[in-house]
Length: 143
Image (cartoon, rainbow, N blue to C red; front, top):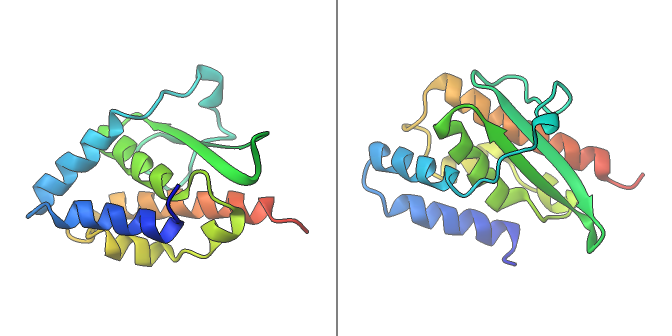
């Protein structure tokens, strides 16, 4: 698996190949197709991300084969947001809490070239999802 910085760079390279925001949005929506749906019981108040206009649920878990890492799964009722979740999972899932916390969400947003492609509400939702992921990482730190 590539490093968290390499994952961000790979996504940024993909996005930079797309000449305009419409194609970038279409690419993000296409990434949504790879997401596995959550089980109905996983779409609960406990897993819901606040601050998103759409319904968004994020589940974090540790796995016995890599207990030092956090793995994330997510779902939304909106196609674009599902794509945003897919991007965030590529970056953050399967990383250590320290790796996750080493990332500045504003830097990720800027590097992916989404500033002009997303409305303020969508941008706030993306930051809310990154904040939730980093909150899960903070909670998982030994201590």
